[in-house]
Length: 305
Image 1 (cartoon, rainbow, N blue to C red):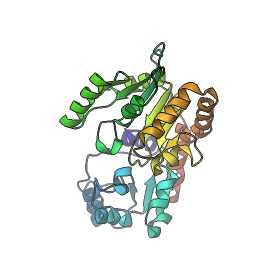
Image 2: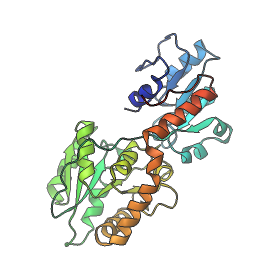
Image 3: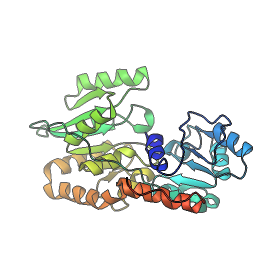
Image 4: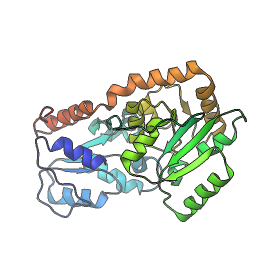
């Protein structure tokens, strides 16, 4: 989705092709969406075109965690002309010698085209993301188990299980936890419509580079509670009132409890998200790309059609 959105922006002034991998195509520049996952394409392009612009986008799995070889990621970033980060905290987490190449481009979002009607009588909390360990996908369910009997909190979990074990665990949690429902994978627009009916989004990840779902929630008017990791803090701000420690179910339960029962706290989350909303407007993303392209000598992006 990021590739398609960026391609749409760049197509205003340039010819763009989206590839699964680079295979010696004759192009004037390459934008790689993962320093680790696209390391082969990055090396191949740089070997063929040592002087043409190479832009590498950094994701959470590139530098937070051990999914990719650290030396491979560092090499991809070292040969890049510019490093795209999805929020400013990641720029500070790069090796010192690479930080001057970093440019921030927040992922933008449009308001959902439609919204599901809110569920009556419940305080529904969305968890949106595929079920894999880096997302700590069952932390919200664990937090919901800690709430008092009077709470009306319900967890609506959207996302595909990426392993049989995750699917089994999700089904078991749904069977034994009356506050948890696993809705599985669904088309993006449907997921946005369902999230927009919820009172809150919970992001429970162990690591993030700059989660698009936060931008989508903020633009949809859904406040967020999130782990205090670079990707979430960079999106929401260091003083955001809805942050909690990685893996801390009791802390998340406390935030859920406060959001449900304390109207002033809930309004503080709403107000903080409202202040961040301009960062995620499509025009802001287009402007950031325009600035970067001018910097690289490619000219500006055209105005809105």
